[in-house]
Image (cartoon, rainbow, N blue to C red; front, side):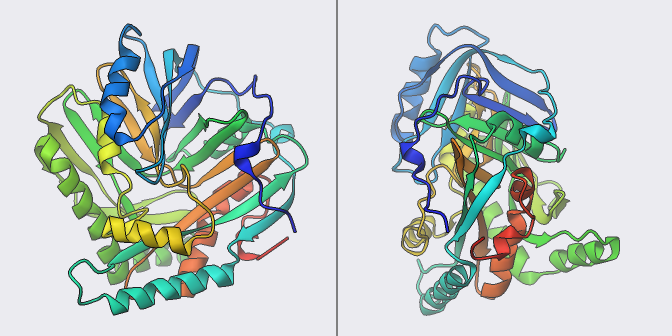
Length: 389
């Protein structure tokens, strides 16, 4: 059994990682180019002033990219690039695939299921309280050790093989440490005065058999529990964005969307900003963490997450993205990702718990959400179902 990696202590040269941030999704690729520098870190309270200072004198081609942490009291990790490239990276070759030697579930699946049951007991006890827990998102992790430094850009390129996700790599404060993943969830995108969000909540595993896959899709569509969970997220985002907007709507209602491994309930939200100069990163900071990755009430759920999860989330379930001097940009929910440092990585996956959730089913959902990452690491897609190697 491996020892959990101390990711904060890594000190490995990262000269060939290709800049501090890169994103590749359905609408193209953006990666830092030219001179880059770290922006003074801080919390959301100081973000407007820090963004203004960073862009001052940087030129119209500058881009700020990076990651916002899950917890609002923790500091962000943002970078200023004086320009960006939009070319497509080379496809990763088999030789670029890491060779994991050991992995460990943290917590073990049975322990995670126990935490889900504990959360359900708390919900039942607080059901009549006005600020009682209505939803909580609980995550678990896999700690992986490879036989050599994990090729970070190649890992991102592998994850980008799914055309509907946005693959990302964001350098974190320690040398050779990065958050790498492939998220299906758009937190907020801004173009001029127009904004968009596409929250996801409510999931089902896809099946290689077309008939069973269609059955899984249909079951999710009619699931009262999943639709209730999804509605909480949409209501939160609409309420949060309303003060910023002159118009906000969800014209298409809730529908189904999918990645290669999962079905999701999703709702496209679109609006028009009252102030078209509002930076996209400030909208992202106002929104996260949404109930899709935290719970409701958010403060209550966040406190319980700290008690029930044995591993700190850091930048998992925060936000990753970019912002231009005119405020345009896109920010995504940092899910389906790994914190990578040298030869070690920690993979994250979570599930939304509401009244009616089943602990075993939620544990199985997290195992399914690990699948794309596990394949990119060269591990069996069902490795998350095993407590140890």
